[in-house]
Amino acid sequence: MKGFMVQGGDPTGTGKGGESIWGGAIDDEFHPQNRHNCRGMVSMANSGPNTNKQQFFITYAKQPHLNNVYTIFGKVIDGMDTLDAIEKTPVDAKNRPLKEIVIKSVTIHANPIADM
Image 1 (cartoon, one colour):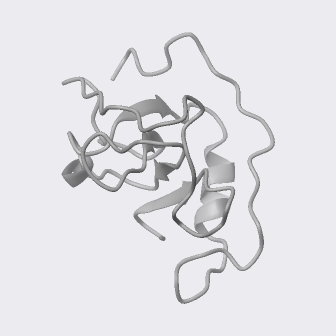
Image 2 (tube, one colour):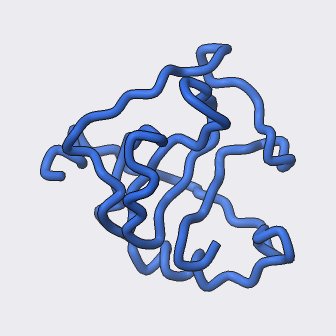
């Protein structure tokens, strides 16, 4: 959704997803320093409190209304040009990309959100 976020992590393609790698839902984890205060915040998608599974989203802009609702677990610190390209991708009426988008690799730093 241009200006809002891109969601992924649903191998079924239905929007309902599946289970976490632990088999069930994962509890929410909120920290006062972790805020949806900029582009590139990576958070768990959920359907209510403590329902995190495998779906996630990346914000395209500051989204303060998501604070303490969605668990932040990362931040894009490099590759904003890729995020820009994803945001510009044509979508259908349900905001799904017309062409499949696949994240082929991710580098996880020790604590990329420590400075938030």
